[in-house]
Length: 178
Picture 1 (spheres, rainbow, N blue to C red):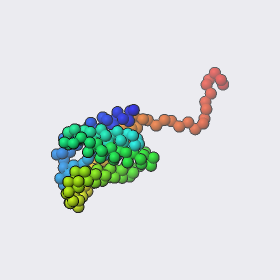
Picture 2: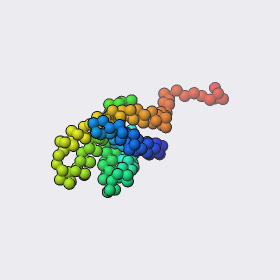
Picture 3: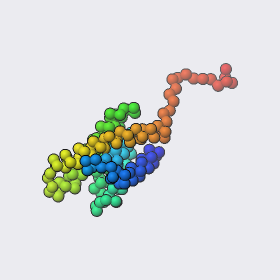
Picture 4: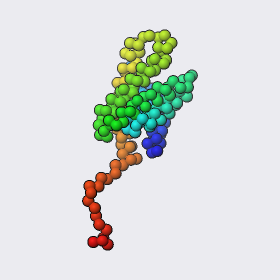
C-alpha cells in the first residue's frame, strides 16, 4: 500500500513539473515525459499491478487536462505500466542499466502508440518526421532525466521499505535459560 501511495504522490508532483517547469525547459522542441518515467519505474520496481495503477492514474491526469477524449492516454500509459511490470522479476536493486532500458522502452512504446492513435488513424503517414523530430529527441531527454528520477525513487523506496536484517541461524538464548 505504501508503494501505491508514494507513486500517487510522485505522479502528482511529476504531472505538475511536466506541465509547468519542463514546458519551459524544452530542448529541440520537446520536453521529457516524466509520467512515462514514473510509470516505467513503478512497473520495474513494484510489478505489473503498480505499473498499471501508475499508468492509469498518469493517463487520467493527462486526458483530463489536455485531451478531448478520455481514455487514449489512459490506454497508452496503462499498456506501458503493465508491459514493463512484467520485467519486474529481472530487476536488481543496485543496477542502473535495466531501469534505464525500461524507461527507454516505455518512452518508445508511448511514442509509437501516440503516433498510431493520434496520427496514423487520421491518415497522416509521415512516421519518419515524427520519429526524427519528436520520438528520438524526447527519448534522449527522458532517459537523462529518468536516471535522476530513478535514483530518487530508489532512495525513497529504501526509506519506505527498509531491507529486513538477515539472520544467519545464530540463535541467542535468553539470560534466564543460561
